[in-house]
Length: 205
Image (cartoon, rainbow, N blue to C red; front, side, top):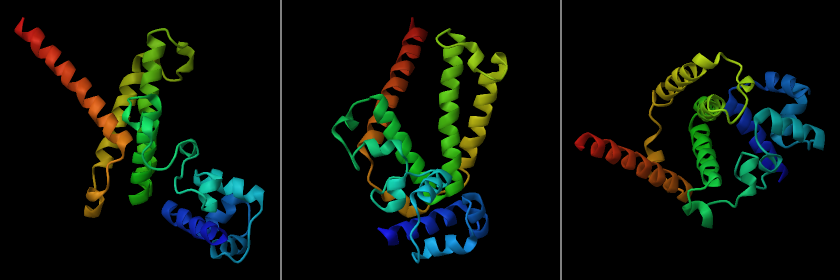
């Protein structure tokens, strides 16, 4: 487990594109000590483990090699497909979003960050809608209410363009489709098709 911790500490820093010196400074230790951690020469204490997990935005269990999923909330779910992934539930959406984010991150850490920003904007847009409809206080929204939605959509479009600006390696096209993602795709396309049929029917009448 100590070797896995060392490996993941080095991998996470490299993926983030941070020098050992800068990472050590952010983590509040010397570069020499961080080098020892990354080489497995020394073991860290609990305080450093918590700081490192927070800094790299992963769980302590992931750093220690106990699990292979990076995000804390995904630890509540079993690895791989689970029974309820076939149901269009909120947890299914969370699992699909997490798997997509981790996929972007594993191939391109910057795109991983932008995918997280995209998910954040989607939720922000829903909060704005809820505020306009009176389900939550409008005071929750920091931007002017009349422009918050359009600014959000404009930024989301910029992220969309960035995420598709460079194609992923060909081998990524042959991965197994997780059941939660399959469910989200199927449910979303049913929603789209139903709306399209409704529009067509209205045009006929």
